[in-house]
Length: 525
Image 1 (spheres, rainbow, N blue to C red):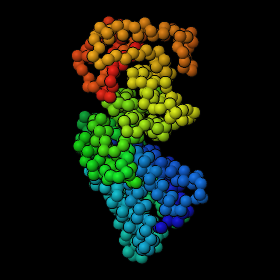
Image 2: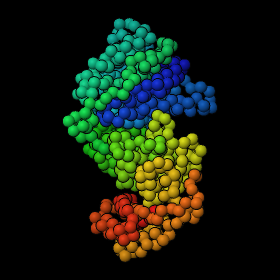
Image 3: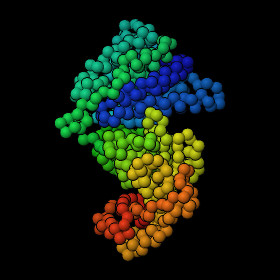
Image 4: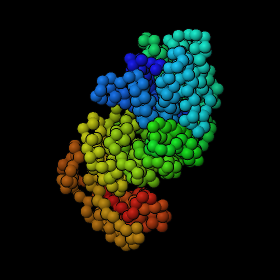
């Protein structure tokens, strides 16, 4: 094994600490493939997932693990925790390095060079459309420098230090070859994250302190170069409004090429990595449903949908600091929830949503200040899994147990000027919901809405579970909104009918299409 146990654990620790310190600086230079300022955060969360897997291994009975077991846990944990395109690439780079580092038939410097070469190749194979001038090119430069040092007979410590130095020297040069990065005058953010991990490897091998990212990464936010229309630069290829990430279980199948081809047909920035029967897929797309369907060759779980431009959209980060996570059993509603600013967890039929999936989404919904997060379960999470979320610092779980209440809560959260979580809780408690058959008449819809309007409590004292901090002597506003969730694609005739019924009652209508629904859900708040 290339690394001893102490060195392996030191690498994990240094990579984790390095990205904690560097994440903000890396976020500041992020313009490719999407200028969403989260590459540093994604790389940190990816490595943090790997480090937690090693923590779990260390805490398990049987004594401390050997280096091979520790690094295998590190790579696999990073793969399952990978965030964004950059995180998927980094996790595959780690997996390629660890696979080759297990062999010791050659001298350690040669094993190091071969491991870095295999890591670079693995990262490249993760992508459907590899781009030069990015982290992929930097990985090649690092591997080549290590190979030259090994050929010259350098010891392992000198070879790894030489490889890292070559990477730092090449960073600006290779980034300038990419048109988007050259126009923005920034280095590739993914390459910066990889250099932090390589510097951590140098520290582990040489037993010296890791290079401080503050010495080479800019501290200020880099102004984004904009085109004539005022838009942020992009990669010059289609793009997509949504990021979809998921894990696919297929113990006896090699799904890599199948998933890459399927996702490339519906979006770009495609990255797919796999290990031990698990595949982690990533894509930017305008069609989250099509992306989720493209991965149906195995058992899908940990499905997360986010709107990529939500930070720059009108919803933006909330002034009251709250983040939002919505769990839904309807892929068709994921885009709507994500556009409202939520990190969306989608339950597929094959596997349940577990507490760990929601906790992952909570991490994504927090900003650097560790803001509080509201979780809207939407009836898509089992009660025992929800119980595991209770007591987590800064997390509030709402009692919205169906798609209609989840939609009502989301609307209240987004439209509240302040105290978004309290507004969502009040709306959920006030809402009255009914279910109709898909072929229900307009008259039946009208009667149902009329009954729901009369059923909405007119005073806070009538609510069975008043949210904390609610005024107990205030009179609630009269019903204001009508939310209707209909099965299948949205029918314009039905939408018009809902609008007419809403107008008759002075309600603001919202009509959502849920392909997985079997009945019409009607909610009045």
